[in-house]
Image 1 (tube, each protein chain N blue to C red):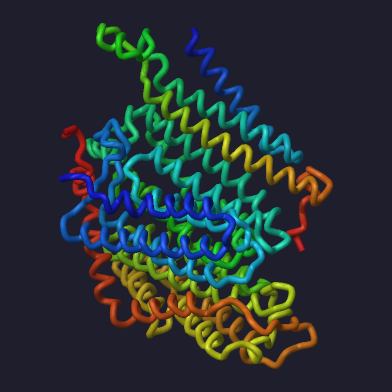
Image 2: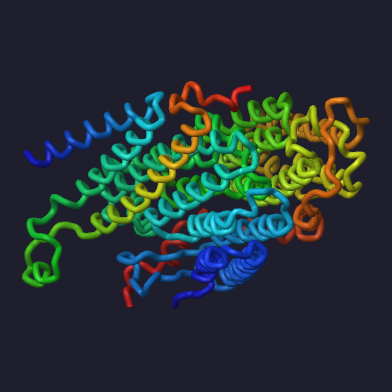
Length: 114
Length: 501
């Protein structure tokens, strides 16, 4: 049951993320990017989270209990750092755009079309 | 086989350079010196690596002493070492151009650290043996190049940067999703181990979907047809040395990824992927060449031309035989030097105008006031791009056409040859408009001094050498590379799985 709920949550987050990323409002697009990244991180987690029954501590491994996969958590930590970096860069660019163009509507940020 | 420190050197030198440049942010001169030194040292490491790979086979370095498949491993096979060598060579020219560049954005303390971080991302993507590290490197490269374009002197730089980061982050997300799917099916991210599993003919449930997601992400990074629309804006508005790097080596990361997909990972499905790539390549050639023909800005023309040139490489991959792969790699290698030289030359032309611009209306007839050497270099570069001897463009066209004849695909062959004539048309027209005509009333005022010609001169000299003296060694080197690529066992055995000592 928990696995199904997890899959459903990832799917819904993914849908919201894509929808928001395609919005005209640049701030909403940036937030959609963050949501999409969380959805993919959860997908990563799902790849290794449901295998064992104990947390991957050394004591559990030595006791011979089946542990969940620790590598996905390390990968997600790295992915979170990367996503944080790109998210702040997007927000920074949107911030300067809002000052220079007096709008965050992507339909009005069209000086390149000439 | 033991750890080869050259791999770490090629990757870490630009990183250390970036940190040192950040620490000496007060002195712009010292920053530029550090950048150039780091670039040269990294080039030395990459050249040594290329020599060692061809002498002793695949070289590896297990980061932090953690042995594969548990730790992250850097792997340099013939293809990776060749591409890393190409990247570091062009990067030295870019840093040399930066050393003498007069743009305002060069004086920002963040410029050189970001430029060096872009090199870290590029070299890391070429030398890693692990899909997740590939993702991190590509993201580092994207973030650095976006920041560099956002601080460009061009007033539209910011908008182009926003456009690119939104599209590219979507591509990055799909790359990550593909990598997650790979991990869910194979339980590993080590490319050699995945290749080993795939070679047995086993096809887990998510593997084809993962392959398509990776392919889309690589196509987006290379600006191939359905994902190309950000490329002309982004490459035009970037500062000159950055746009020279973007159009020549950054797009090659995607090409490198595609090479890995079709020759190492998904060999059985390669036929299907190659057919798709061939079609996309032809579309790229036609639209890129026609777009370059009717554009209004010299730098934008070269950006469209990159779109077409990547199409040539993809058509080469699409033909798929040994000779065609040799042609594609020779093309990718030579194009990096030609295109970066041409973009730098156009940047030099633009740097002589009062309000910096490369619009044809404003640089029309400007050549009479510029150093005469500049005109000849532009002509040579244009001829090389179009594939006229004695420069290296001729060698790459010849190698590619040989692959096409070997394959017997006459329709695409005719398009490839015909597009060469289009290339000649737009390059010669640009040269004539800038250097042969009398100035018009719309021609911009000139400044007494512009950027230095050293870096593009060096690159054109390399092109000339690659087209004459080094043509045969280059083709032999790449034939050997392709021979090793077509046997994935060499890569798998070289990446020393499982002997975790």
